Length: 498
Image (cartoon, rainbow, N blue to C red; front, side):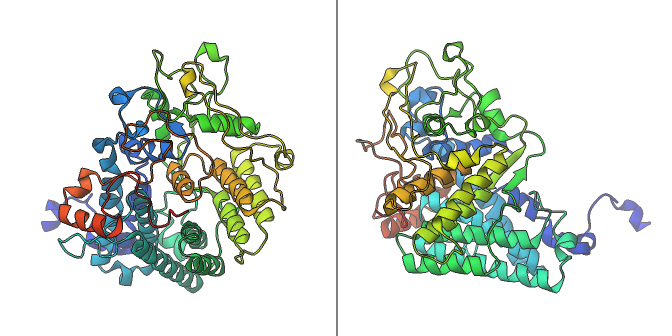
């Protein structure tokens, strides 16, 4: 009789333990919340209204808030709160739950995947804000901030340990991933532990490259270890993408909401190269005066009487997959590592060219051989038909063809420019790499409402109230210790050095 009073639809703790359901039930939400791909307004605030603009992929098409907004460096706190709230609530808190419930012991392979997602979320936060609560996250009510250097130490440790656990699980039972994780995986990888090892190692390589200027010895060690400990993403693996199950959030943001357009730099670099990926990335302008051209908007534009709603929309129509890490990135990372003299298993030229080939293949376009031999085409000037005050000449003459006799910086610019093209639309990574290298050469904002003028670029996002309201004293301490007392958008991060 007692059973009659129970809701038979409820999942009991006992049922959750079958096939490791208990250990994996949080993983889909964590994976989908590295960027909140299922909640369009949140992903817009988490990335589109900041990094997508700062990385040179997109721009605001209208003067929101009287043109005093993130695009013109008049930072909007309500826009930036989600940058912290999404990963802290939906990734870090879920990892903490897994840790407190002992899943690191009971389900070590599933816990290791949770750690990989945590590291993806954590490094994005550190690359946006700088010092963050991380190594002691959730240990007490007191919020303790790590410096960026300290956080990166944890990232490397986490990724190494997660890879070791996944490799051990794969060796012990090659079918474990199919039984334990495949049903939870929201990517195209179908739970394959061997591929997830390569994802984690590609992230480790990414972070190693990130610190290559500030700590070259550690960077070389981590990069070479990533290659040795199971390898990085291959062309056969494809990109780390997650399905929304319906439409891409950028389709809603660009079309239904009319709140983003392609950036002028995408037009002038890809247009200058006659790059066949340009019509894959953007749609022709709807303004009849533009005659079907692909036309972008300059960052922080000076608006006239006519906004830019008729300029080119971002092209994710019919594509429900949100990209977290492009497969071609692994080749460009290896190209830069080889350029720096690290053992990447090949030459900078070979990895550079293979990265371009993989990107062409992933985007379904041809002509890669001719493209790689192009030694003449370079960036176009930007011409704004609505307001010539936004016009600007080309900032670089970098070409496509690899030139072995070029100096280091020319080779690096070539690698980063092609990596930037391939990684589209991951604005967060594009912005981080621009800050680290200065490439590709982006147009400075035309309107700058910050305290800094003269073509300065934003270096970080100042702490929003979602962080300061939690513990102002800890924020103040972190600012004093790690940011030279300046919680502003022009304080460079630890790895951002000349």
